[in-house]
Image (tube, rainbow, N blue to C red; front, side):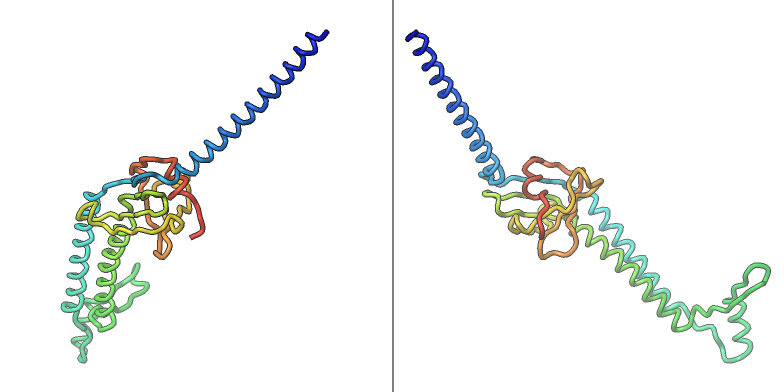
Length: 231
């Protein structure tokens, strides 16, 4: 009888020790997981999260934009210098202008005169050509300065450097270093079809990360730069 009671007490004691040990092990595992999660966003050295070199493409884009600017500048010069006022004071001048500038519709149902050499049309064509050329160049520059070539998370995980593309090479682009709290992605990388929109506080428009680029550490990117936060 005494042996059975002693065995029962020892079995209960062993059960309690096992339960306490398992609980302590679970607590230690949770603490270790939390520590690993907290230290995963604080790398011990600089980490390049994203990189994508498109120097060749932006060189071709620069050549295209330069060619378009020269073409539309020539068209503006032509419109300003070659268009002449065809309206004359005499009937002969009016008749000649009407033969060169009259446009007739279907079966002669309607017709109108257009004096392309008047000051209104001449200045309008000139300014329109200059605006088109400048607009193409401006869009090319904006796309180049908003396309990201590299994203670097610095040691400690508090600062981020965003490098933009450049036709002169990956190291010639704009470099922006800001705190991590001032950088956010307003769309998850799996939701964006072609570009990941990156917002940097204090800068207008979005910075674009091409999905054809390389994510060296996708998990670290998602919980740091790729996370959504109000900026």
